[in-house]
Structure formats: structure tokens, C-alpha cells
Length: 146
Image 1 (cartoon, one colour):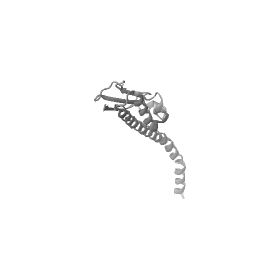
Image 2 (image 1 turned 90 degrees about the vertical axis):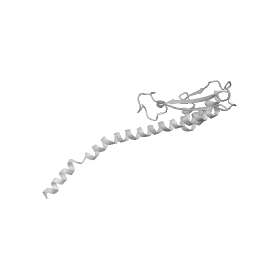
Image 3 (image 1 turned 180 degrees about the vertical axis):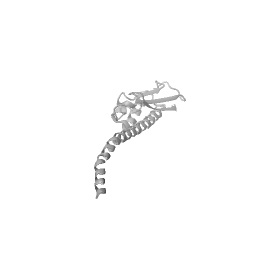
Image 4 (image 1 turned 120 degrees about the horizontal axis):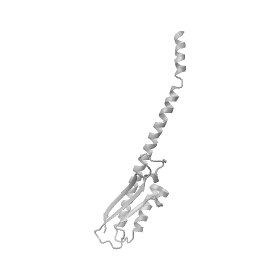
């Protein structure tokens, strides 16, 4: 009889331990989960920027392309699927080199670089990787003009 009373006292003393442990572990697990989601998004955007730069560079290498506006619209059109409305904003920086397409001779290298700040496309306020604006995601492609 005495052992049954001792067991019930032990159970009563440990009654809230699981709740306290849960309350201590959940914030860490959620922070880790959101960090992984954010890192995955950065990788996805990085790949989209690289693909968009390649798409724009393919447009720029054609002999029929005479201004860089066509290249920029090709890049923004491709990014519209991955980034939505951000693709058509000033947050995306597109650099085409050389800047004048009309005077480029055949065999000249054409470079398209696309950049965006990680703080501008982040789903979570603040940044896991340094201060705001520290991390810049970019994609670049270089092809030879026809």
C-alpha cells in the first residue's frame, strides 16, 4: 500500500514537466524550420536568376536584337513565373554588357547579369544571413554574338 502512494506522489510532481519541455523545444524547432524554408527559397531564386540571365543572353546574342530593352523584357518575363510581381519592379537589377546592341559585331561576348537583394524577396522579416541588404543573389550568363 505504501508503494502505491509513493508512485502517485511522483506522478503528481512530474505532471507539468512534458509541457515545460515542449515549450522550450518548440521555438527552436520552428526557428530551424523557417530557416530551412528561407534557405530553400534563396536557392530557388538563385536558380531562377541564373536561368533568366541565360534566357536574356540567348536573346542578346541574336543578330536581330538591336536594343537591350528586348533583353530586359525577356528576363522579366521569365522571372514573372518564379518571383511574381517582384519581377517587374525596380528591385530586380538587370545589366547587359555591352550596353548598345546595335553596334556589336559578330563574335563579341555579350553578358547579362541579374541581381536582387535577399531582403527584398525574403518571406521572413529580417535576415538570417547578416543585416538587411548584405546578401545579394545574382545570376550571370555570357554568350558570343552571332
